[in-house]
Image (cartoon, rainbow, N blue to C red):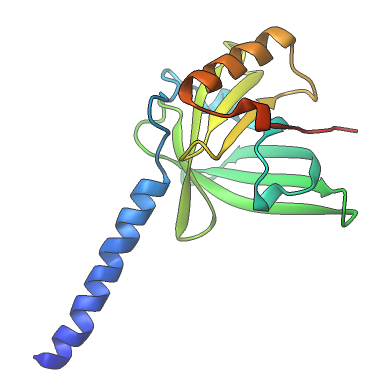
Length: 179
C-alpha cells in the first residue's frame, strides 16, 4: 500500500496540474470576448501577420504568414512561416487548433508543442473575413492579421482602439514587414 501511495499521489497531482495548466493557458484575456457566429470555413486559408508583440518564437521575423486548413478530424491545421532577417533563413512551425466550445465561437486553443496549448481568440473580424484581431491567453499576445500584406487605416484604428480598451500596450506592437 505504501508503494502505491508513493506512485499514485505524485502521478495524480501531476495529472491535475497538467489539466489546470492546459485549461488556464487556453484562456482569453479578462474583458475580451471571442467573436460569435464565427464561420471557420471562411477563416481558412492564408493570413499575413500585420502586427504582433515581440516574443521568443517570432523574434526577428518578417514576412510572417499563417495558413489554416481543416484536418480530417475537424481540428484546424496551422502552418506558420516567417523569415528570420538576422539568421537569413526561413522558419516554419506546424501546429493544431481546436475549438474550446462551439465551432461558432472563435475561441480556440492551439498547440505547436503538445501537450502545451495556448489561447487563440478571434476578438474582432470584418464581415468579409479579410482582417482579424487575435488575442492570445494573456495581454502578452496579440496579432493583427490580413488576407493581404496591408490593412486599411480604418480597420487598423478599430483594432488598436479595441486592444487598448482591453489593456494591451499597443505602442509596443511590432509592425511586420512584407517584401
